[in-house]
Image (cartoon, rainbow, N blue to C red; front, side, top):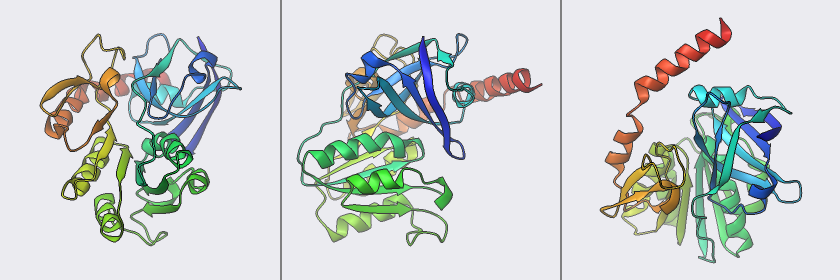
Length: 276
């Protein structure tokens, strides 16, 4: 059992969850994830690690509330416990001095890409951070990113920020104006896909954190398999970071939709049971 130290809503539909997990906190590295269950009847779901504190013994993740399990997590309160909390899992992001690095995040990926940006800055890189939101009130952790970024941009669809373009257009504009040596992107599948496509013509290596369906987290179940450079890989043990120019995106999109109807039925059933 792992105790919830903090759970708060950052913006509508996005929550932060901080869990007491001393042994996990001691070994966390940027880009890794944990697997947890919201209750004894819930499914095992992966959450990318957004921050950690070895002295406090806590690990923080940011969750996008979309299905039954994430809805359950969003209702947990301080002092409650989750029955399963395993990690850190996956290979850490490659952190070294590349030069100028662009870090792109959207929704839950804003929190997930933060430790990557922080580590890249500590490694001596010039860090450019680009956050994608539909409106200004959906942006969070701006202060944290400004602390670790040499440049900070927001791609939004309202008039609050100067940039109203979608992320791929902003990425293309940035790489036209300066030399970008590496790109890291975390967020929904469509966001990371468009980032990879935006850099493909320039040949800028773009690392994307893949989020396929995942159950086991240790390479045993095979649910998270993806095709990269024509070879089958498991996102949980071979990733989650992969070169976005080598990913079979159509296969990934197709596999992510496989249980879509089942997920809707599960959520409807749980909401009727929980709130009736």
